[in-house]
Image 1 (tube, helix red, strand yellow):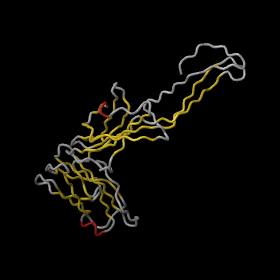
Image 2 (image 1 turned 180 degrees about the vertical axis):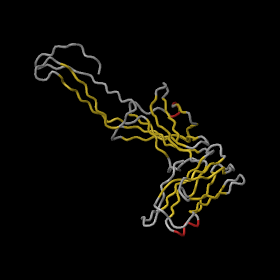
Image 3 (image 1 turned 120 degrees about the horizontal axis):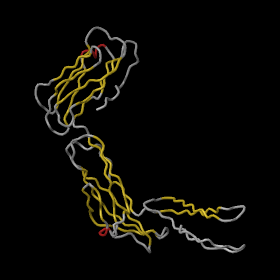
Image 4 (image 1 turned 45 degrees about the horizontal axis):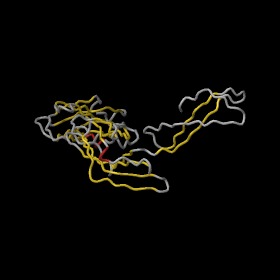
Length: 277
């Protein structure tokens, strides 16, 4: 609200006060409160409450279902339906005049469409935006902002693109559970390379008492097998730990597998806790 000069208002008189609500990129129900100080004895401060329903200038809707983590070394093309809104007197700008700003490769696809909602007084335009998630070998979460700018360079829409790169190596299963004496003969673990690069296993160690881990670490390959076996008669008290597998893979030198050994009289455990990478 613009500053109001000191004004004398006689009893029974009134003045007009202009209130400007700055929406920015907000959307939905917006409440603005402006306080006016007076010399009144009973109500020295008058609150002017303005409520508006803001329609986003630009929205993003992802097309299709989420495909899950990105495989190491692979890119992925994701499409969004971009919708731009306006009113009869201020319609949405043509998509040809809008600029895309992002660290990701992005481009408009196909032609734009438009529609009008006479009851709400809204004018809507829509177009498909294709974004390419880059190839990366290092596992972990990724994020990058995507902004839409009008012809004057003002940001009228923003969305954070979030994705994840899967681990280069995957152990299956992620956890081993020893619950019967029969399982003491050994449980198998397969370590598979997702990026297609052969690797060697340098060692496989564990701190779990009486657990022996055998692995085929002779040559480089994309898939390795390991066997975990309990040694010695019987089983002592329940205990847990992990198997640490060290490799020569440049992007993931360590893979971990959770281990749980149920002692005699312990309740049956269905799944071991997943080990951290």
